[in-house]
Length: 229
Image (tube, rainbow, N blue to C red; front, side):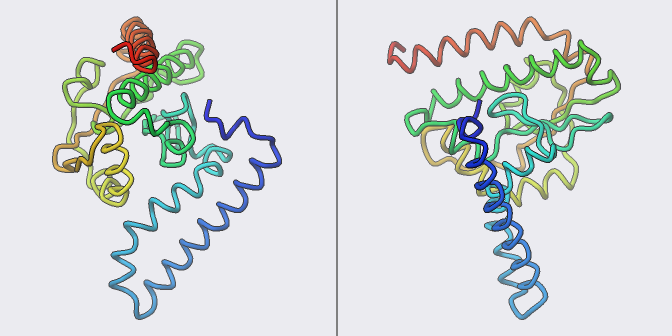
């Protein structure tokens, strides 16, 4: 669990309220800039404002159900009966869940373990009937490499214009998160990012593989923590 959600309820509520107001205020400020003489600056500033607003509003998005978390670093955006849009945790989640000492190979193991933990919890809901079989599970390949996506049972598809636009809007977050997991400054290539998708039936078929991978990754991370490997 994200350590933030172990805080006293009053403290969580205060943080969520204050940061949500700040995020809304930034959004209003950006609109005002767009409608005044700062139009060009506002267009440029959106690449800074969007990641900051997302950081500030993460707890509220979780509270209202816009973000549905299946592990500390795997969420579904706007879950519905047609699609489950998988997303990596936000910069807010990174701040509370990841440690500076995790950067590099530790971060990769930890993140993938959290993804597998989330996959297994989604499968639990599928098996219990909470998620209908008509749902298409989708995501983007910056989660993991294309080869890893295929091993996990996902099919590659051309991303929509909305997906590409959204990636550009969140590029600063993507840049530092990607660099963190690589242990050095690394610029992700947007043109190489693909949409990935899998049916509910195929997702469930991979349950044993996800469980095996989760167990291995968790063990590897623990060993890395002890500097054994």
